[in-house]
Amino acid sequence: MQNPYSEIFRAPGARGFAAAGFMARLPIAMAPIGIVAMLSQTRGEYWLAGAVSANAFLAPQISRLVDRLGQTRIVVPTTVISVVAFITLVAAANQDWPVWTLFVSALLAAAMPSMPAMVRARWTELFRGRPEMNTAFAFESAADELVYIAGASLSVGLSAALFPEAGMLASTLFLALGSTAFILQRSTEPQVRPVDHGSSGSAIRLRPVQVITFALIFVGATFATTEVSTVAITKELGQPGAASLVIGVYALGSFVLGIIVGALNLKAPLQRQLAIAVALVALGTLLPLTANSVPLLALTVFISGVAISPTFITAFGLIEQHVPEAMLTEGITWVTTGIGIGMALGSFAAGAVVDAFGAQNGFWVSVASGTIALATVLLGQRILATHKCELDGCEAAAVPAE
Image 1 (spheres, helix red, strand yellow):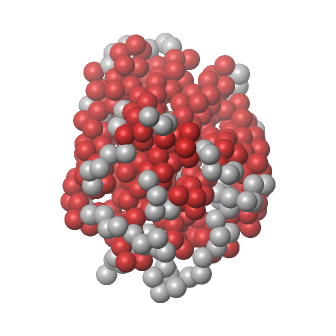
Image 2 (cartoon, helix red, strand yellow; image 1 turned 45 degrees about the horizontal axis):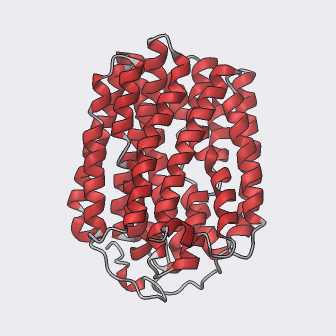
């Protein structure tokens, strides 16, 4: 039996853009939790840390420009803006600048290009309409989990072991180096497709994109709640250094199951697979409420995280089937932005609950978020019913919201 993952990397240039994209997306995991770790130490308030990390609203607009103008023309200036903004944010935290400087620099840092969307767009360019697409998206979802295993753990670990700003500084370095390596690989960059009547406007006008994005806002909130509550509860238990290990374990289970799902190439309708995956996420949010020690916390978050990668795989697969080619990067970015918005809101809400009611109660934010995500996917099953796209685009499958 052939290894489906070795097959997708035989495509020219695939290894190069996948490796560069992995490095460039580490800040997605490192920056939000790095801000939490940095500001909770320098300012002493979790709500402030969560609020400052709440900036994911520019990404779809930037990705829309990527679809219109090409990856290279947009990635270069946006990366420069983000790097400068992150450096300013670090300086503001270190030098105790006014709170407004934290918010402004964090907002400008949100110009960071959506690397997961651009990498998936390159995979789509290589394998559109072929079975390898599912394997490539599964690999990317597993890579996302590796980012959370390595990125979040590294960010928290550096901040705890060295100094509060260490995680953010490392995140900024990965962004600069990874993005540079990615844009230097021009041979695999997707061609810019002309805008027509089926791909004008914004991808968020399409009902399937609305359903998936809204659901993943609350899935993302479960991620952030787990991260913020883990940092708080390990500190409360007198083992703050254990936070990086627990957060890494959280993504490990999802990584393993994502690899398996990608190799199986399941035949069930994607909307049904998404419902099952989100149901498992929702059920898993109950487990950390029982944790009263670091080992038990690690075990419960490991189990609760197993369905995350399958959720990503099916969500991005649905987007690829429902969104026209000329707005694919934007469509994918709306999903990742939904996750980012959810992480920001989850950080804020969990931080406020932790400050007011204690570390353990922060996990109730995950329970509420998982329930809303599941209800959204179940109610949206008819809208998400997949249609087979033609090789020249998915315009027939894209149903605008009225």
